[in-house]
Image (cartoon, rainbow, N blue to C red; front, side, top):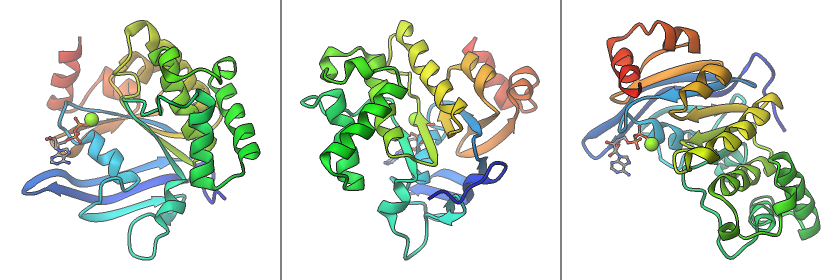
Length: 249
Ligand code: ADP
Ligand code: MG
C-alpha cells in the first residue's frame, strides 16, 4: 500500500523533459507534491500543462527525467506500469464514460478490469465511491441521463474507487455549463478534505485561492513561478504571470 506519509512527497517530478518532434514542450520540470497537498497549475494554452500531467502517469513517455510516486519510480526499466498507474488517478476535461453503461457500471468496470475484483466486491466499492461524490441515488442512470457535472462526478468516483495515492485533474470543469461547475469543485474540496494528494490544472481562480495549498505558473514548457495562492495571485513576481493573470480579469 502507500509508503507516502504526511509531510513527504507523494509525487515527485525531477528534471522532466519532453519534445514532440523538434518542438520542446517541457523543459527541466521539477515539482514535488506533498502528501495531502493540493497544487494548482496555471498557464496559457499550449504551455505544456496537459503534457506534464500526462507524463506523470506515463500516458506520455518522458524523454528524460524521473517520476516518483510515494518514493517509488514510475520511470525506468523494470517498472510494473499497470501497478504504478493504479497509484495515480486521472480526471479529464471530457469525462470519458461509457454511454451504454450506468454510473454504477462505469465505476464497477474500472474496478473489475484494473483490480480484477469479483463483481460483488467491485459493485460494493463502486457504490461507496458514488456515495462519496453525492451520486448514490444516480447509480442506475446512464451518462445521457446525467448532467455534465454529474457525469464528471462519476468520473471522479471511478478514479477514487481505485484508491489512488495521487489524483491528477486536467481542466475538470472546463467542459461544464457555469451553473454545474460548483458541484464538481465541491466534490474536489471534499476529496481534498479526506486527505487526497491532488495536482490540478484549472482556470478556476476563486477555487484556487480558496482551496489550493500552492499555485504553479507555467509558460513555454517551464515552471516560471510558484508560491502560495496569496503570493502568486496577490503579488506575482514574474511579468509573464502578471500578464496572464491580468488577461483573466
Ligand atoms: P496545455 O495543456 O498547457 O494547453 P499541452 O500540454 O496540451 O498544453 O500542449 C503543449 C504543446 O504541445 C502545444 O503546442 C501542443 O500543440 C503540443 N502538443 C501536445 N500534444 C502533442 C502531440 N501529441 N503531438 C504534437 N504536439 C503536441
Ligand atoms: Mg491542456
